[in-house]
Amino acid sequence: MSLVNIYGEFSCAKFLCPAYKYCMCGIVGYSGSQNAKAIVMDGLRTLEYRGYDSAGVALGGDRLKVFKTAGRVNALDAMLPAGGACHTAIGHTRWATHGKPNAVNAHPHLSYDKKIAVVHNGVLENCAELKSELAGKGISCVSETDSELLAHLLALEGGDMLEAVRRVGGKAKGSATFLAIREGDPAVYVFRKGASMLVAKGEYGSFAASDGLALARYVGTATVLQDDEYARITHDVCAIFKDGARIFKSSTPLRVSPPKECACHMRAEIDEIPAALERTYLKVSEALDDELADRVRRAKRVMLAGCGTAFHACRYGKLLLEQMAGICAEAVAASEADEGAPVDGDTLALFVTQSGETADTLLAMKRCAEGGAYTVAVTNVESSGAALAADKTLFLDAGAEVAVAATKSYCCQLLAVNMLARRVAGDILREEELKKLTNGAKECIARCELFEKRMLTDKLFLVGRGQDLVTAKEGALKLKEITYRQAEAYAAGELKHGPIALIDSESTVIALATREDCLPRMRATVSELRSRGAYVVGLSGAGDLGADKTVFLPSLEDVTLRPILCVLPLQELALCSSLCLGLDPDKPRNLAKSVTVI
Ligand code: M6R
Image (cartoon, rainbow, N blue to C red; front, side, top):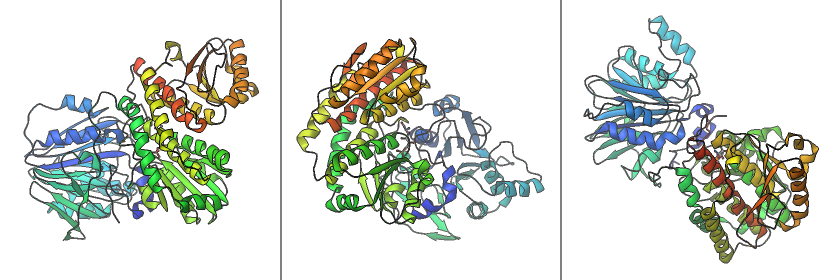
């Protein structure tokens, strides 16, 4: 089975391929009658969320022209010559795993004779072997990358380029999905091994990209290459081959809309939360059935796993399953999942993942499936690896999320697990309750009251209990991720067992309270913090906390839904702080949207 989504295709074979763990780049190629440079640059802008350490393009023609730089696609854009008609080009945007993110290591890489340029997504496991083979022929590398070897190997093969691509691709071990162009040749050559690759024929030429998002502006359908398939794409044909013979494959609709151009994706994604919640409500209502609810009730062990923000959604889900349905559940960070007791056929394991391609989550899922567990994916990408591998999927339909910091997907994950817990408890979320939630979300987003300049500090703390501790942790993660400032979340009751030693008059504490029954204990915590000199801001959906200042959430009867509102001012705080510090909230340093390394 092959499906196309914004991340390209994910087959079960890829799920099991150890090499895919290294792929965190975006590659794109075009050959046709239009301006190839513009099309490839447009593709790189769309794919940049997959990695933004460095970027480069190679423009075809009688002589190849390569431009590459450390940093963003905009920096690359600035160094490109204006004009310069060219009808063949390839490009690459990189999240470095091997070699520093500098211009030399950036792709494309040129062959020793400068006649072939290559962009590569993956890692060559037989790099040392290939390097010494080339060294034996007097060819040495100028970069620290394994990818450069592919260009030299193609040049050494000589002769028919398509055959050279087949041979070099076959020789490469590990993950070797690459595009190549050759001087004086209008075609883009494509090879897939390990990392996803889509090719498509449009009215004005042919396209190749590692991610369907980069194609969606130009074509409505694309063909997903499988491992060891390769292609020659030109203005007129998009010919696919395997083992030396042409093959004919059907194309699949690209069910994706590329995100609109905007100054700040995180801003747009927060603004979209009320609408995204409505879509999630509809999709999850359709998918939730008695069978799933029964399975959760009958399972001897219920495990929820995810990474980062998705892990926080798991912690919330665990609390709700316990509090609403009386089901004992555990929430684990997917990267730590194999540290616990092995799962068996009596386990129900639920995996929360926006992208559906997080390597730690997929690995945990694979291990659970091997142990016989029933697996459920809660994901925003309908045809992602997680969705394809799971026994059951709850699709969020939050819409493409490209800002690295997860915002709308988190709120939708909370709603989905809330609806699941209710169903397990024999209840449902009614439309009127959803309406109150989305109205509350709109009000929260419009207000934006939490930010204060003194919060741009490394001494920021967030405290809460139960579901509010989960929100505090998510808020702290968001702040760290896009402001690079230290923000720590603690269980309110744990402060006096150690962390309160950190508190002084320089400290700012955000105290969260969305449950009335927590108010007395939270008030005590706030008083302890204030008496040690901290400036305390309450974020409350339950009542006054006796803080220096309190931001009140819109009223919402259902206590279990209040965390969906409570996280919004924290997302806004992180965004405002990041902008105030002059940072780019959409592309924070050292991170990429989908973490496909373990
Ligand atoms: O795509 P996933 O939900 O599996 O991603 C998991 C984490 O990498 C992700 O939530 C990460 O923590 C976010 N960037 C946080 O904003």
